[in-house]
Length: 211
Image (cartoon, rainbow, N blue to C red):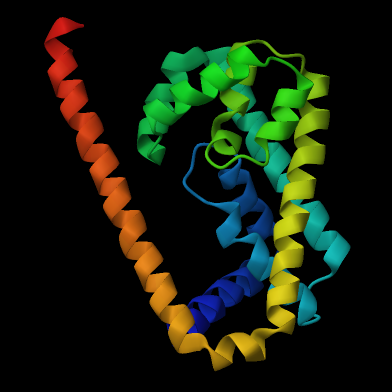
């Protein structure tokens, strides 16, 4: 079954790389690399329920990873500015439109609360550290808000994984329906991604001569 195969592969990868691997994935998730926490933390919860990982060590490792990734993005923005971020970001599939939206979000609501809240918002949480750096936000409030926000979000997803694992027999009983849902979500997601990129490409071409 597709669902079972995906879970087995994810758990095996995390088992192989250990806490360090999970920390690295969450560091990438907190930067501009396309690694969603939703695809990592629930499987960390699987390992905790299986008794292979310690709950508190898992939370600490992934939170440290999130902080390291966020600091890397913050420093890129602080010392390199937007041109440097864009140069590096093109190799990591950085979406300039999403970055612009995140910058606008940060500029409208500057402050520690903005960094904290952004950790719970899809896309924004990947990019918010960059405008915080370019905007010269003080480091200590940034670190505090990032650590608390990332830890809460990571822990929430981890506990979701723990609950899912505890009811895994029920998931397996309906695995066929789950597989269909997963495939449909993937198809819709890919179609949406392609459509958005094509539309942005057309806009960029149309605006090019006038800029």
